Image 1 (cartoon, helix red, strand yellow):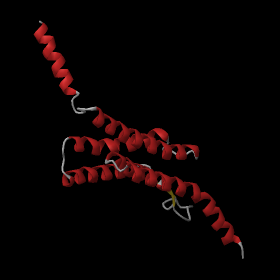
Image 2 (image 1 turned 90 degrees about the vertical axis):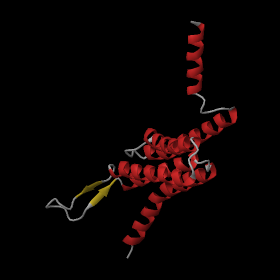
Image 3 (image 1 turned 90 degrees about the horizontal axis):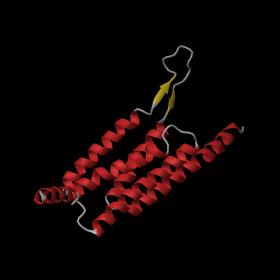
Image 4 (image 1 turned 30 degrees about the vertical axis):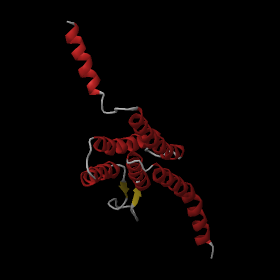
Length: 171
């Protein structure tokens, strides 16, 4: 009976052998945490402004994108195969983002113009996936810089829009 349980323990241990050493474990942990953290920062900004997709959504999108490239890397996929995985992630997230876009007006008899809502949310989720891909590929600094640029864009959009509206109202 001891032999049976020994074999069970060996089989169970081999199921967790995808991280053979501390260095690989640390690399995986840093990339996944970086993706989740950066996605969370973008989600926090959106949540503060009471937008539909917040911290959890952005963290999950970024973490998922990172995981989608980390696992094939661990499996030894070559760059051409990995690019196809990335294409699938980009298309899939694009499909998810399309669900956040709503169009109002146009068809209604009293509407004078169309009103589109959710484009910034969709673009933000799409960018969050790209940041997750960058973190998953080990391009942490690229992911950090992209996140900082996105936060700057989101922060400057409101003041810039108000400035332009004031300027356009002046004769």
